[in-house]
Image (cartoon, rainbow, N blue to C red):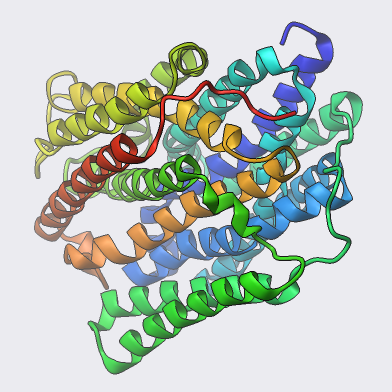
Length: 462
């Protein structure tokens, strides 16, 4: 951790993956202005988010596998350059359809670089520093998620929503420079020479069908078309599992799922990131539509999340390495749920920030900080040495799927569809329903961890 190369590895991986996380949230603040500029429906705004997340979730397993085979640094840097090029296309998009397509291309770049960041850390840091390094990565990359509304609000309000995408170009240039200078090349020792193309296609089609079907259901209800497309996605997902059992070189080695800890932490990841994604999406929109906040002010409202995660995430990871992760993984979702309960007080008028908004944001931030670093370190420590890349890919895919499904399902379930999100009454009701659902998801996540995760020492395999 104290060497120049160690600092360089952390800087490159944090900036690269942080760029992906930043873009996953920065659109939340820009959504209202994008909708106004393109006269877009709520369904189109969902797809501006979900096209990105869908491509990311569908291909992130392939990204992890490619890194293990071809070189983690190489795939990480290719993904960074791809992401920057797609970001430029987003900034220049002439209509919402082009923007949605460019966002899908961004997701492909993100799928290449995101799993490589954690795998690079696991493969390059000495055992005694790995938990702290993962904690620093989780905290600083998580900060970029929280920075999205702030940076997005400033760019949208004072410049244009297009700059929310163009900002990625200089960040990507810095990542490539540091990566070439400081990050060593690593590969898995015993990887099969061929990729599971069939498995990759099945995952992409399954997630695409489920996402499209649930989003369509939010606009038209559960018609035969929306129900059929969703069920087709579920069936194709089952076919994917069956194929992975019989192919000699599977995209996802099923021996990963023999670990009860790996399974439990991934279920927790699904539920936690579903709650996080849906709440951030509706909260920032709610503050602008219902509570009278501007884009920048709505972004500033979540700034304490940045401060808390920046200051405490590395310490949270180090604490979990000393005492085991179970306590923090159980308490974190409960504290975050309490924060969301406090945020239910935000209604259809401009409230005093210090007394109404800030307490809930602070408690939610403490809950996230408590769980994020131990969750990531626990997933990685439960994977065999040669499968840390694919384990990272699985966990990242699970987190993206959680957010993808939550944004597709919960807002329409709460009555937010078409043009209704522009009306204060509908926005207030929708925000409260989504937030209550997310509190429930966090409570279930804490229960899952309590019954599945052993309080084992966090030691990521070399």
